[in-house]
Figure 1 (cartoon, rainbow, N blue to C red):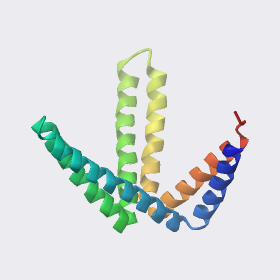
Figure 2 (cartoon, rainbow, N blue to C red):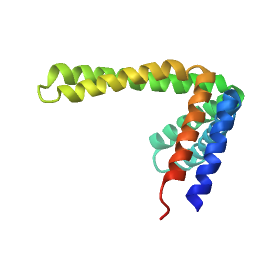
Figure 3 (tube, one colour):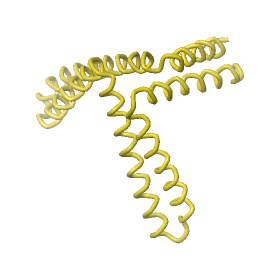
Length: 159
């Protein structure tokens, strides 16, 4: 019963986000920004405590905490920054997959098909990274994801 009700809730949220993709993106951006800000605060606190044991570890945690707080506040203030960072990371992953796919195609005789599949997935990532950097399309993709996960939860058998 819990999976079905969760699935129905996700379907409803997915339809709402598909109807209002920018509102859904703003909500996801705010939630992510809030979580990143809390992560940054925790890293600052624990980084300060860890400087007594390991100065290098403490400094790294403090630097990561500051970066997380900056991105968290940025995501809360500007959902477009969230869309840009998401698109950039997907695009970067696509570039890595294309490179690995090309290396596998030309380097190893037995792994050519693995390289072709990796190359195709990398090209799909590059295309998705281009679309995801637009806040409207990112909102639509978030809505589709909620809808698909909701349908999967409804169709999944209860344990």
